Image 1 (cartoon, one colour):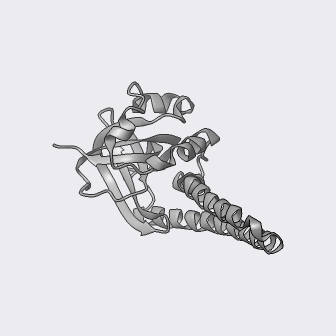
Image 2: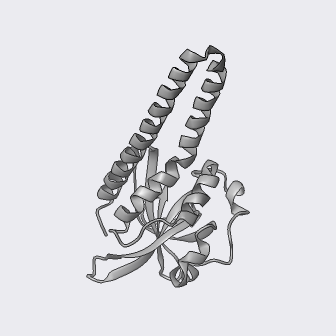
Image 3: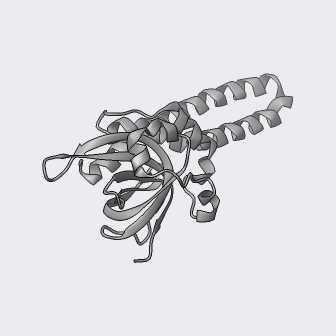
Length: 213
């Protein structure tokens, strides 16, 4: 397993690149709009509305871009993010994150377990799944996208997920029992402290909570 701080640093790099692309696109759009407004003053209102729409679009795709750029780094170049997952996150961007479980619980495919994810992840790239288990590692930091947490959860089948949650994890600590709801991104493995390898599933998390023990 890479150092947790390194995970955060790598994601920060990914987001910085993502933000630069957005800024460049917005700048080009703004320059074109200014030139057009100079020639046709009557279009000022439409130009302002378009700029507002661009900002909304940028925000909508921000976490999807974040995960797209971060996936190869987090999986040590073992995987990349599929378009299906990207589109799902962008379509449901208002749920990343969600602090209200009721908003996402009805979207969860309750039949899916980590066994299903390990067997054929591609069947679930556009579905919310719910995984509960012991927190074996957790870290969070403030990065350009905002407070972001990375949590490893081992479930009752001793299968592991690594969830990237774009929000604060609250009073969740190593050794706690937690539940995460998110969309699967990729399967990969990392070297554990015993010298072997642990298979895990990367999730883009929508909801994260501590369970009563």
